[in-house]
Image 1 (cartoon, rainbow, N blue to C red):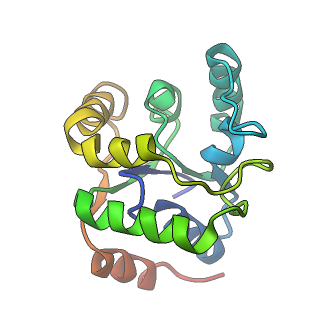
Image 2: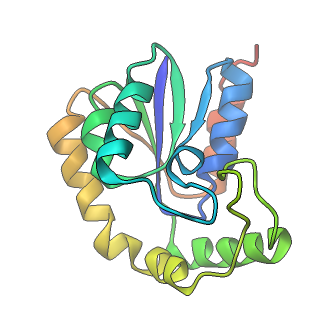
Length: 170
């Protein structure tokens, strides 16, 4: 396990898991939200983003946290493991709201500088509709670009804790 892609519905705990896995394995951690967003929540242009992701994916070792479906075709072929957070949307909406309530106005470690936590209805709508809109695209991308992978699927926190308990700390 040298290149681990952590994907799935927002609010499930991907970033927290990725941090813990990086601490246990010593693999370098890449939060794609940190790489994508520019100060003031400005998006990175598509061509620039794809070039950046391609360069990140070329590295020999990483844990890469984030969906960004438009770049899965660059990341999946390089990954040797995929961890998929396939949680219920109600759990994720509740967690996203809690995260906003507890970190509002501050920049989290998994976000880019100049991007403080904020309340965003569109983001909550994205989470609510994730399983209908984004999940099928992930399934298709896995089939097309990740045939060499057997995703580890987490549907509850107990699964995550059990997996992390089995990963030897450095």
